[in-house]
Amino acid sequence: MKKGVLMVNLGSPDSPNPKDVKKYLDEFLMDERVIDLPYILRAILVKGIVLNTRPKKSAEAYGKIWWDEGSPLIVLSERLQEKIDAFTSVPIALAMRYGSMSIEEGMQELHDKGVDEVLLIPLYPQFAMATTETIQVLAEEIRQEKYPHMSFTHMPPFYNHPDYIRVLSESIRESLEGKDYEHLLFSYHGVPKRHIRKSDITKSHCKMDGKCCSTPSPAHEFCYSHQCKEVTRLVGEYLEMEEGTYSTTFQSRLGFDPWLTPYTDRTIEKMGLGGTKKMAIATPAFVSDCLETLEEIAMEGEEIFHEVGGEEFHVIPCLNDREDWVKVLSRWIDEWAMSEVTA
Ligand SMILES: C=CC1=C(C)c2cc3[nH]c(cc4nc(cc5[nH]c(cc1n2)c(C)c5CCC(=O)O)C(CCC(=O)O)=C4C)c(C)c3C=C
Ligand SMILES: [Fe+2]
Ligand SMILES: [Fe+2]
Image (cartoon, rainbow, N blue to C red):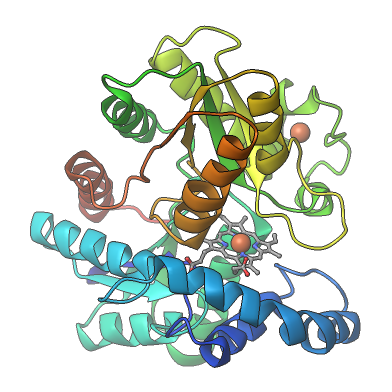
C-alpha cells in the first residue's frame, strides 16, 4: 500500500468576471449540503433568483481582492501545499470542492503516483455539513465510482487540537504585538441554525439556547457552533485573555433563514457605537485568507467600524503558509504515514 494525502479547500471562481463567478456560485449553491432545500426549491432559489443578482455583486467583491497570481484562497492553498511538500516525502495533492482543481483531478494525481491509501484533509478546523461533510461525501462517491482500490482515512476536524490552538494563538499574539486594542473578535463563517440541528447525532441536544454548546455531549463531534466557540475559549485560555475582552461572532449570512448569532457586522457596529475605539479581529473558520476575510472583514468590517466612530481595526491574517502551521500539518501527515493501522 502506498500512502498519499489529498488536501481540500473550498475553491474560487476562475476569475473575478461575473460569468466565471456565476458558474462557480451555481456549483457551490446547488450543493444540497450548502443550500439544503429539496432540489426543485433549491433550483428555483439559486438558478431563478440568486444567480440573477448575486454574481455581479460577488464579482465586484472578488475584483477588489484578486491577486495577479489569481484567487488568494487558491494561491495561499498552493503555497501551503508546496511548503508541506518540502517537509514530507508523502505525495500531497491539492483540490477544491468547487470550481477548478477538482477532487477527482486530485485523486487521479495520487492514483498516477501509485497511491492507494489516502489521508483526506478538509482544510477547515471545524466540522460543518457545508464544508467537511460535503468534501467527504463527494470524495467517497468518486472513490467508489473511479478508484475502488483506494481507501480513505478521514482527518477529523482539528478545532481543539493543541497544536492548532498553539499556532493560531501564536499567530494572533504576533499579529497584535505592539498594537493597542480593547476587544478581540473571533469571527467565524456563519451557517443556518437548521444545519446545526440537522447534524445533531443525538437529535435532542441542540437547543440553540446559549447553553447546549458548553454542555458536554456526543453531539459536539458534529456541532459547528460548539467547535467555533471552543476555538475562542481555548485561544482565550492559551493567551490568558481577560474575560469580556474577547467574543465570538458569525459572518457572511445569506438569505432570510436564521443563521448563527451574534452577527459580526452588527457586533462591529454596536461596539463602535458603544465607544470602542480600537478593536482586533481574527477569522479562525478559514485557514487561508479569502474573499470572506480580505473583503468582508478587512474592507467592509473596517468601513463599518470607522463609520460609527471606531479608530483602529486590526485584522489578523489566517494561518495561510506560516512556518509553524506548515510544520504542524507536516507532522500530522508524517505521523499518519508512519502508523500501521488506518481506519
Ligand atoms: C469556513 C467555512 C464555510 C462555511 C461553513 C460556509 C457556508 C456557507 N457559505 C455560503 C455562501 C457563500 N459563501 C461564499 C464564500 C466563501 N465561503 C467560505 C467558507 C464557508 N462557507 C469561503 C472560504 C468563501 C470564500 C471563497 C473565495 O473564493 O475566497 C460565497 C461567495 C461569495 C459571496 O457571494 O458572498 C457564498 C455565496 C452558504 C449559503 C453557506 C451555508 C452553510
Ligand atoms: Fe461561504
Ligand atoms: Fe449547541
